Length: 110
Image (cartoon, rainbow, N blue to C red; front, side, top):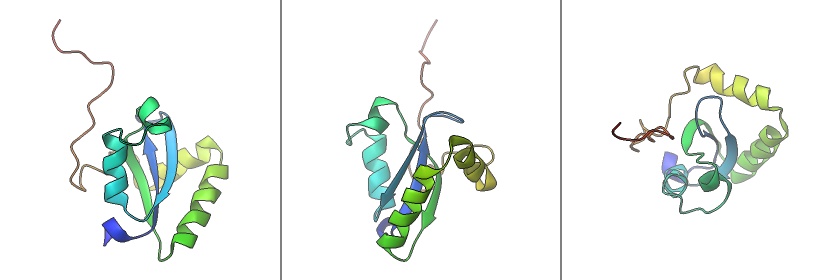
């Protein structure tokens, strides 16, 4: 079950925007925390809320090792990894039941 399985995830502020790599044993719960800014810090400060990629693991140790590996990668390698399965930078949290993140910098009215 995706909500109780160790995984590594990559969030982005926008396509080709600020990236964040994390690890969790509860992806749905962690996404909720990020998207509602319950977690104060990097992701809330830089509005990094869109799920671009996630990888599931059998063990938390495997997920942590992969997280460490990805954090050592150059930015372009991370972008290439995202684009192997998500070339259009679709927010993968939406098909998991989350509302779309509204674009930043847009205002209603004239």
